[in-house]
Length: 479
Length: 158
Image: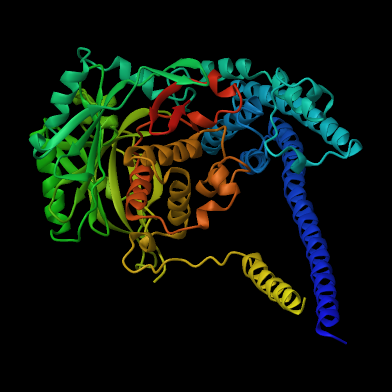
């Protein structure tokens, strides 16, 4: 045997070995892929089955509430409705549908959630009124339609061996896709179209003429066009922005918003209700301050400074003082700190205006301003005044006088709460109506948890309006 | 001939070695996380920061806050899932999430700041729930939405 032959034989074996290895790898990869596809399809199938199940349950529970008379049965059933509607929403969120799919269905579920939440409170005082029953009937009819359709769609899916993962982002746009109309998903589009959301909206507006539940999502871009004051141009906006910066001469200013954009050859209009200014520090190009000034009224809406903060050199109290000072300097009168929490070397401080009425000082929470103070030098590196801009006005004095004292209100507070703060506030609850309340903040019992709780006692009616936990969970809770 | 054979065998061995080296699954070696503010975040906030990092890494600070604001707006909007992780993990909603890019690196301090600002209510988009890359528009659907503004390479719409 000479080396040539040995060499060739070795090569052949090596080639065969590699070939065999490669074939195995390919097979293994195919198996893994099949497993993943199968599991992924299972996730989507589970979500769709879940949706079917919860809509079915929802129909049954809505019917039950219309029949049941006893208050405690009513209450349990309303909770069931809420749970089924919420679960159906979650199921939709787990399906690979494109944006704007099933909009009506999602909207309907949202309305059911809001309405049953509202009813749950009513039911404790008494039964359901005829108006309530009529509203529930409207929901019931629509859910029946959805339920029947979903069953049919699912059936068709099974017949056609439909696999969710085939489609990636399932687009439910019947106008676009022709081959689509034969698919089971076309049924989902039909279902969504057949829901009578407009009627439901009208009925709800008739029941809640002045709020009570939020029927119209607020569009901030429109709200900002209704602010008091004259329209300002870019130059004026920059002048206003300079007042919010420490050494304005050190910065270079330019406008970063555009009236029109070109996308794929099409021109689209923007609807930005503000002049958006970028101020770059001439000595440190890494520091950019972004300031939005409202076009109408020329007020600063927000400020965001991108510079890195370098450690904690001032205390939280000093940071709070800096925030208050900054606001005062810029024309925000009578602002008081309502909450303050540091994250490493940035102090996150919320302030609200205090309005006096006689001997009382009331904190107007809907007019809050959020700030961020850098704890290396006390500079304000974040400002968010949108709520103040949209809501601030003097409230009528009659709205600010409580009917009983803080001490009397305290008697209504559970002994489980160790009160650390107490004050008089104006706040909005749910439907947007402003209410005068005594606010108590404290910890539970013997310091079992980290969370604080906030209780609002209506200062006119004495009713316990709201109780909820107060804690920003952005810090790690691991101890 | 002998030299050729030896040469071929050596090349084959080197080739095989190189092949095996690159065929290994990517080891995710996280950078040493000495004083990064990312570590102070709770797990939920870390997910939020990772998403912002993957989606808006090279964008200006205000653009990063804007992407965060879109996510926060989706939580409150009835058309989208109700929780932070629900919105982020909604199937195919964010390409970077679907493809696992959010695990590639530790978010910078600036991203962490942007996450916090968005979480605490800063919203340069004034209520938008959609954003897209102008250079990568594939369907005409987005033109039916109301466009609010553009920041960097993103366009924000309602």
